[in-house]
Image: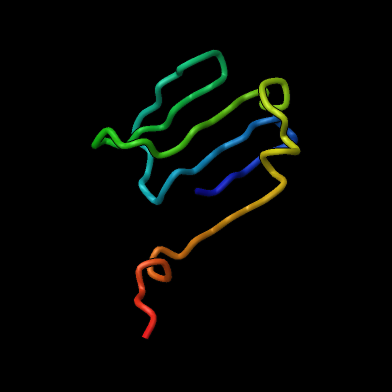
Length: 75
C-alpha cells in the first residue's frame, strides 16, 4: 500500500496494489473507492481529507514490504 497526500487540494489517496482502476464507487461524500474491471479494490480517495482524518497521523510512517523477501526461506 502506498499513501499520497496532495496538500494543495487536500486529497489523500491510498493505493492498495498495482492493479489499474477501471471504475469508482462513492461510499460517502468525498470518499471514493477505485475498483478494477475484475471487481478488486485498487485504491481509496479521500477529498477534503484534513477535515475527515488526522493527516499527521496517517502520514507519520511509511512501510513498504517486498513480498519476495517475506516468502524467501532462510538457509
